[in-house]
View 1 (cartoon, rainbow, N blue to C red):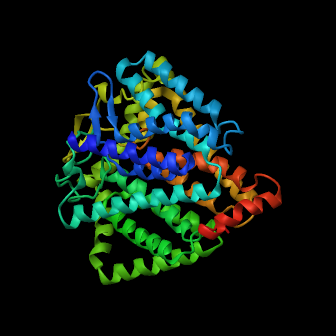
View 2: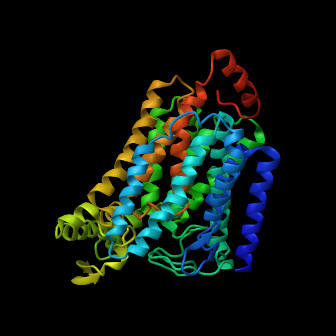
View 3: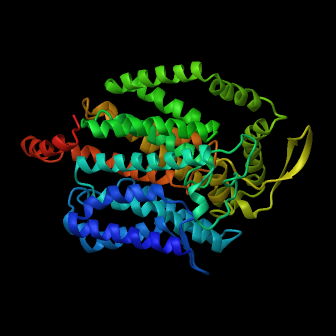
Length: 470
């Protein structure tokens, strides 16, 4: 507890000092770095209320700084209506209505308010205060830097048998092995994330960002850092031992390969050569992938049972929602899935058993069960509209100004794919990368084309010196 208090004091001090000395907009990259970095274990419990995590404290400080100085110092994003404003209002209202009829109203209400504070409020602040392309690049760099640090923690976790989570008070999670518990795939890296698969998911989204930034930053020191971060993040996602993030990363890199027309293709070629070299020099790496693939296809194995469990969850959702039309519409309430006491027939250890449904390794199923078909539709529309906006801006804007939208499109596609593999929606640091990324994506065209051509050139020249966009 003492460590958590010290961390919170240092974090608040950094944010306030940065805002007062450099301006509110300079706080945004620092906040992005800190939001991704700290684990949920860094928290101060408030009995009867909620857990004050370091991330929530950062958001609270951001809100205070925004109302005290942010609105007066920044003007770029405030002129425009908040992207997806009406859709997000509908989503929050629907979650509140679902909470009102929840089987666990207090839990559902806390979950709704948590998602509002943890993710939608930062989305609002970043969308309304970023006024420079330079700030966008620094925020993305901060995300990569945070995942670089997390990858260092993962390295220590695997090769030195020490986890950064061991210095924090232990917090239970609803699924996955905690550090030090050897599962069916051995010890898996999770760094500061709740479980290894969420760590892998964040890396699958951060690696494309690092490759993009290699085309933005030209200083040798910055490029050396980005290459080092990329290589270490590849090691981290491999050591997470998670099939979903591996496939999500492959999907993201395939999108970059087919849509980008710049140096990113060359970088992907270098990575492909390095990967082939590793597979030849270290055949055990290839054996790991091959064995996991074969075990996944074997329903009698732990990995095969884990894979089949995803399909069992869809059958459970169909069965439960078909019992009651009202629940099919409203759901059972946000975060109520774990309180329903569900069971299902499942093939386990060579026989069909009636097993309790204690985990929900699918965000699709949990959103359906928690908020019903309408809530799921609102989440789906948000993600689809975000992906559509990214792809539309990629097609509409000239090269190279459109290159960043390929990365946003790849990240949203990866996130949507992972929603079928794990409960990734509404918890975990990777959601900050999603929500803040969508906010930046939606305001970025306005930053690129704001003002007349002469004024725009004057604004871009200093940015191109320190952090070139073109």
